[in-house]
View 1 (cartoon, one colour):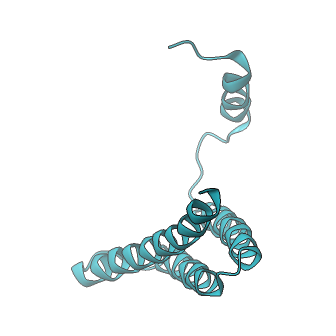
View 2: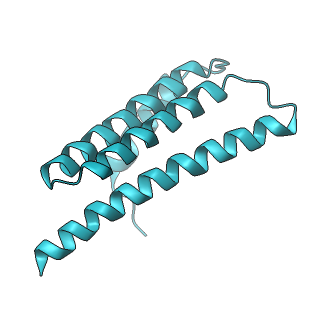
Length: 113
């Protein structure tokens, strides 16, 4: 497999600019939530365009679970029940996302035939 230089350049730049030690996780949580917001907004817009309002609701729930994961990342995971809460929140969010995309996929597949 050949890696193109255009794909490697951002990685090299990030490695050169990155601080040697970074202890804060809030920046990563913010980036995760912003990325998930863009994904859910885009999919919600498309679901609304193909008249699948139920999928839009599922994407909103997926985003709420993503925000919950952001909150949970700041908690103490030294006890087992916190791990279970985080895992169940993640599973629920991914299940909502999957269900919404399958609803949209069905509409697109029906329209293609």
